[in-house]
Image 1 (cartoon, helix red, strand yellow):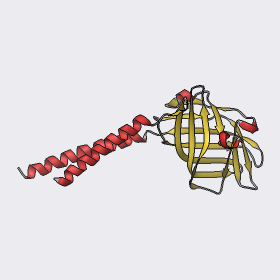
Image 2: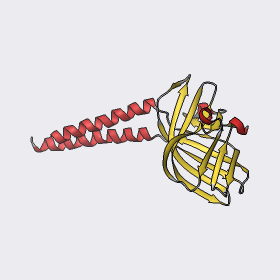
Image 3: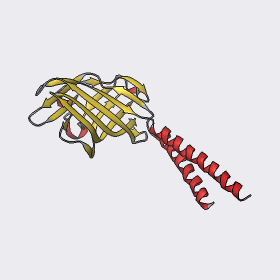
Image 4: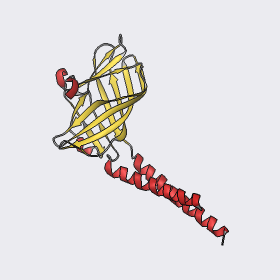
Length: 206
């Protein structure tokens, strides 16, 4: 009986904590980053995504869905402009796996800013300069200088179209999956299973 009681407490904790996490993080959604500029360097095996800052390119987001719909028309900036002023983020195409968290991009509107901190690269493919990069990371939302909860785990996929050692176009999609909802279902499922097991055990001792 003690084991069943502990299981009930654990299941309740999972259900409550995940529902609270869902309330304080960004909900599911996605947004397109459009067609802008990137530069592939076959000598160094790197690709640099550019926008704003000294590069002079202005990128905007579009076709937002769900929680990211409010960022339609937002200005996309790669890299850490505050720290470097470059407006560029460079990937080493030889590197995949976990990374030290770093700001890959921001999407800014007149009222709020969405920041994507890169934590890992899950896949890189390179076909003659046509490069696809799939990443994982954390999204943060800031309104009026105040962080509005987070981080929220999500992904960002970038694809270039072009040839070696020249400016090319790129497309990108940022996405946030409804993981907290899945965890909530898992927690409530545990509660149900624990309740059934408790009734069965109680019946044996009647």
